[in-house]
Length: 398
Image (tube, one colour):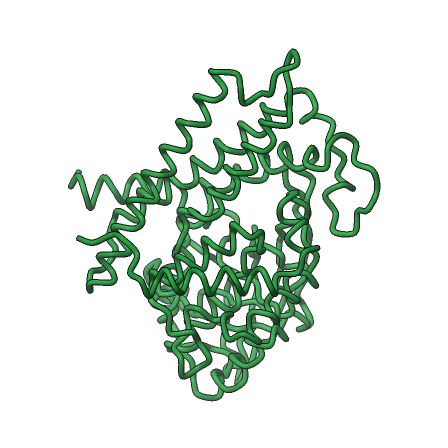
């Protein structure tokens, strides 16, 4: 199996790199490099730049405005974007709900929603998880009862990422409470301005308002906002998760974070010597780099198999586990490279509009914050415990 890049793929890498050098706003790249929080406008500005180039909807068919790229080209694009300091795309619209609409939606839904997603006119959030229904998503209890040409929605969603910015939410709701767990669920598109919707912030360990609770109290949703068939939403849910879990190993992000870790370790000193000159600390960096190289090699093998007509299997769960643990370990070493200076970070330094003097170095505020925030990597998108169960069942046949 050939895991080397073809001449055409190397040419594509050069094209992506040149585009990023010319078009990625320097202020956004600097925020990403320093781990500062991005404003909604930062995300939308970058999305519009990509859309103008025709490189925004990488997972869409060309007929709807997609790139038509291979999985290898997508991998190269993600890696180069991470290396340049481009923000990760807010995936809920372009990479999650859009493929579901393309696959299962009506023509009217495609005509209305897809152009708005491309133009960043809608900000979507995901209404999946509930209290008591996270990894066991099929246990969800949010109800949608038919009332003429509307559904009446009642219930609660949680961990709704960036829901404070959203004007639309795609939701899994139970339309037949008497059916088995995976049955009787439907997929609804809901306008967040509809009366009866309340969004409450959840402040995470790092002090950030990233996730939310969303409450539905007799929210009237037009029946025409149903995607696919009533009570067949689990099919949509599984299809969406295949897109959500694409690239969860986070190779590009980990390589960029590792490079930043080395910069910090060269700048920070202990007893007059750079931290990176400490043999034990350097060995820990080397161990992480070798683990990352192994995950990257495995990713390339999977991509090569896909390019040759194969289908990724349980090995993607291995990549998710290793990728999340590596990224968490990198943030741990960043924090340790700073030592006591990682502790007194000031939240205002992380805000998008901060222009003051940093408490320590310009990179000093983010490592502790990221260390806390990225505890989530081994939980979302199917917790690592769930991924290990998949491996045990499908690979080890236990």
